[in-house]
Length: 235
Ligand SMILES: Cc1cc2nc3c(=O)[nH]c(=O)nc-3n(C[C@H](O)[C@H](O)[C@H](O)COP(=O)(O)OP(=O)(O)OC[C@H]3O[C@@H](n4cnc5c(N)ncnc54)[C@H](O)[C@@H]3O)c2cc1C
Image 1 (cartoon, rainbow, N blue to C red):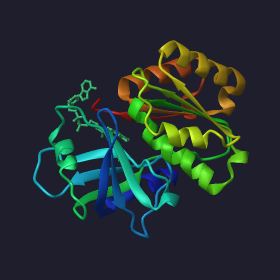
Image 2: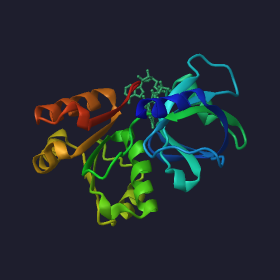
Image 3: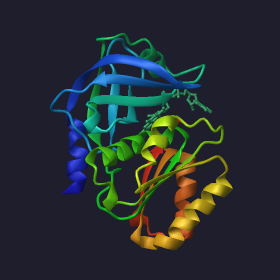
Image 4: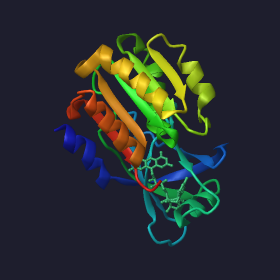
């Protein structure tokens, strides 16, 4: 049931109207689109975005929706280097009112219960977690949940930092900024020692990082069924 619910929206394609974009940090840009009334998603899910204003090869990419549904806007944030793909060049050309299309949102990367949850973000992998923690604050039911967000970035370029610092004043959400893999492992180990398989583990970021953290969790006897992964292929 859950699988179909989380997957079937892939067949639902709609056009989104572009509002604005801005630089979030060095080589990182945010794009905002209008949210139609009937569009919703579970905080943490991703959409499949297509370029429609010109013809390019490989015109579709998955992106996590970084806004929560309660924000009434569709926000995506992506890394764009000096020599970007045609897809990302086309994103930078968008002007107000132009359209991209989105299928979904889809995926099972969202909180399903009130288990203590460890959210582990590597760099740009913070996007689905911004949506998740924003939603918890908006629902005002944070007291029932214990959320520990570990955010690692080797360049210490933490996007959304001001917002996340504000969110961390919520008693049930903690945010820890890290830059070394050693420190990350220590923080993970603290959580696994305390919560073992009563906890849920979410990892998002570049695929090699997601795979290595998942292996670390399994070494700590965390069962595969308690680990959810959003592996950002292409980085
Ligand atoms: C479920 C899911 C959710 C995702 N969510 C997001 C998201 O929220 N934000 C996001 O940015 N991406 C996200 N991605 C990844 C996204 O879909 C693209 O694959 C990714 O952004 C790469 O884009 P690109 O192929 O256009 O390449 P570009 O980023 O333009 O890169 C072009 C080429 O340069 C190389 N390159 C780029 N940067 C580097 C680097 N730092 N070091 C070495 N080589 C580099 C790449 O290998 C690539 O071949 C998600 C993927 C999945 C599966």
